[in-house]
Image 1 (tube, rainbow, N blue to C red):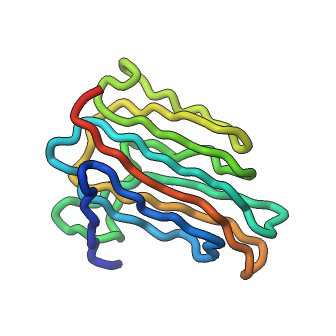
Image 2 (tube, rainbow, N blue to C red):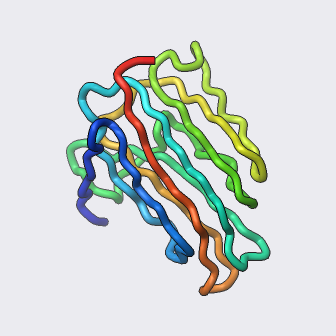
Length: 154
């Protein structure tokens, strides 16, 4: 368990990763959600799966215990189980905030094509973005970008 250190978006936007041939996996980027933010957009763009014959790139959003601020005490954001793991180059966009889809989430995605997820609920004070890469060989690398944008309103 490690104490969480967050980054703060500048002007509501933050590039969390712009990885070329990233081989490490399961890394969490912690973001302090601006107090004025009501909505967010998350962008994951997987452009290359390297030499992998069975690629898999997953993204989960987690919320830590706000008192302990420790990465060992997290829960899934809005009890959401994350994206459908990507098995080919594709882009994922997640829209989140209260009332974004009325009363329910729209979280059906594709493993091989561009997908949009819509999560209905408030933003927490802190969010963790976990990209998990499933690599068959140690030298496989994935090229992707991950960014978050916070907004005041629609």
